[in-house]
Image (cartoon, rainbow over all chains, first blue to last red; front, side, top):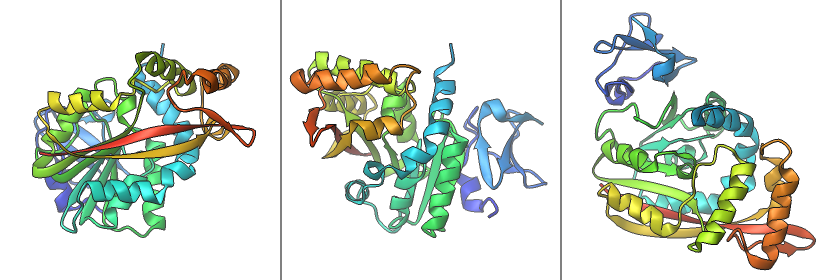
Length: 55
Length: 255
C-alpha cells in the first residue's frame, strides 16, 4: 500500500515538526528544512531521527 | 549501561509475541470500554501512541474512520500489521517512531490514545503535551494505564518488583498522579473509567524477560505480599496459584 495523500498531510518531521514530502523514488519522506530522508521500509515509514539519511 | 530507549527496544522486541497474545491484553470488554470512553464515532481519526502490537488500534478501527499506530519497536509494528491483516482492517496503518516528539502536524487527529505505555515513559508529562498538540480542538486525549496504590510503601514495593520483572519500566502512577499530569498539561479530565485485570503470577513471568536471575526474587516478593499486600496488588493464593489484580484507569479529556 502506497503512502496516501492523507497520511502525507499529517506526518511531520520529528526533528523540526515541519512538512515532509515523498521523494521521487517513493521510498522515503524528505524534510527539506532538515535535509533528512526518513526511509519507508515495507510500506512502513520509519520516522526516527537516528535512522534518517542525509539528503 | 544501556539507554532507556535500548532497554525498551530489547524488552519489546522479545515481548512482541507473548504480549500480543496474552488474554488480559486482548480482553474484549476492556477494549470496548476504552473505545466507548473515548466516545469514538465513525468520522474520528485516531492516533494510538506507543501502539505495541496494534490491539488498541484495531479495536478503534472497528468504529473510527481511520487509525494510525506508532511505536518505537519494529517487532511490535510487525505484529500490529499482522493483526490488522487478520482482522481485515483496511483503515489502520502503522509507523515506526518515537513519542517525543510525535512526528505529526498539530491537530492531526480527533482522538489521541495511549494504553499501557505511560509507565514506560521517562517524561510522561512531555508525552501527554505532545498528545494534546496533535489532537484537534474538541478531540479527546485518552490515557489508559495500570495504577499503583496510594500507599507510598506499597507503590514503592510494586516499583521495585516491576523494575526486576521488566527493566523497561519507568514509573507507574496513582490515579491522582495521572490526574495531576493532565492538569499540568492544561487538560481537564471529563471522564474516568476503571477496570481490573486478574493475573496469574507464573503466567505473567512466562511472558516476561526479567533481569537475569531475578525470577525467584520476584516470586518471593509476590509470596510475601500475600500477607501484607506489600505490592498493593491484592496478591492472594487461589487453587494453589499466586494471583494478583492490576487496577487500571482510563482518563479522557477534551482538548
